[in-house]
Length: 119
Image 1: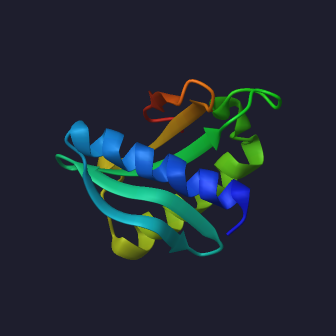
Image 2 (image 1 turned 90 degrees about the horizontal axis):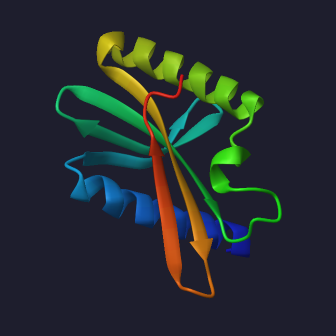
């Protein structure tokens, strides 16, 4: 597994732990929908939450939350539309979130930011 993939998986594990502590039930990870992958598929109450996780270990290219491009958001939106249609889910109880994780390797700390309902 490449370094970038290992960092991504580590970030997803941090995000899962963060979500569980806040009352989310994790339904699936790395959910394939058409050509797109949703990092975390969770539920909190009646709401189904799709979560994109972005992790960075350096600020060279900016913070993690700055790495979600317009193209990536459009692809995620298409995947969500397909999933909601195929599973006949109520769109009123669907949400897309972003969890950004900036890791400071020297201090061995991670800063987690949770953005709710980003589309």
